View 1: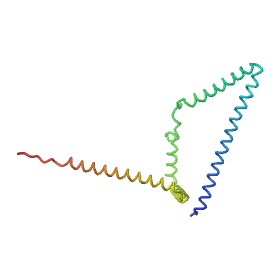
View 2: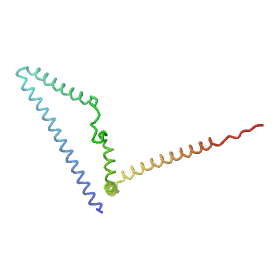
View 3: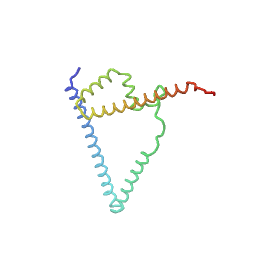
Length: 168
């Protein structure tokens, strides 16, 4: 069984890799925005001898607004149809269903991963309090369900008893 220090090291490396990817995406987005800005600036400068400064700014501004309107139109349109069914005739599974299927197919790996994460996060007091609160909520719901079931059973038993008739 791997020790907790090894798991924490692996977790730290995973988090570092994730943060590196996020930083790369952020830098690429900044480059994209800067490139778009420079492209608009170049278009304005190219059109200004033909249309004048005001006309060039109006044309580039209008083209940017049209691109923005097209983007939001495409984003707000309803989906064109259902996702394509797979070979068994079912529609594409949701991410939660995919995870459930993966756990069903690999139960030992899922148990090992849950156990490893439990060991790594054992010292986190926030996680402990969150789990305790969730456990308390589940226990209260179970007690309420059990109480409702016993009330239903008692009322059903009372209904089945024949009422005593009194004839004076």
